[in-house]
Length: 199
Image (cartoon, rainbow, N blue to C red):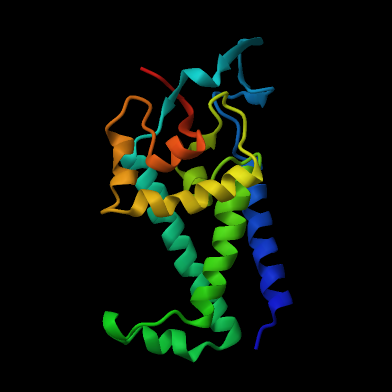
């Protein structure tokens, strides 16, 4: 059986791996981020691109990021189930939807992923979950700065309001000019591309 300490170490190692990967691939337009601006180096000259010129991410791109996060969480659940020998998880895979219950592996994976990779990553310099990093989108304040950990926590729980009724709070991101979902409006956040300008 794997201990809570070992699970914590696993979560830290996975997050460190993603962080290193991102740091090695975070340059956009062959430039770097400096003080809320994207500095693009072309021909030896520095061109400043204000984040307000970046294109808002619409519903479908955000949905894709959510799907990717879900796939990664499933993989994490499987790894934890193997490590702790969670037979209930593998038995559940054979059960019908009505018979399925949350197993220890799923609970642990949900806690690790939501706390570290959703809330933690979004409040960090990464400005988004692994799914958002892969889709090249980011969560920011109206002034394009990174959000605080408290706002990230609030935004996470505001997903509940976006989910009811019928996920309409998420879908409205495709219906307004700034592509804001209900939880963005509540927490005063924006989701924009990392390297695409407004058309």
